[in-house]
Length: 119
Image (tube, rainbow, N blue to C red):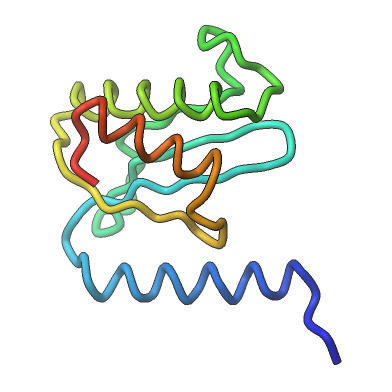
């Protein structure tokens, strides 16, 4: 029986997260979620279970509400890097979830790196 796209996505997400947790214990996690209409990023402290900073195209002040393109991903990456600096965070590991590191996800990561966040 063939696996559905959703099942493959969930398996890939678990594989990526478990590997990252083993390698980067004690560091903050930059988690990315991409839907058909929006893209968002969160800076999460898994030890305390707290989100320190977040950015999304759902925020009206970014000017990309309802858009999920590379320009929006670059803007979200720059904003999350800026908010991470305000929160006193310089270093995190990049959790792509079940998404492939390509296109919008890669653009967000590159913009966060250019903004000064070590990923």
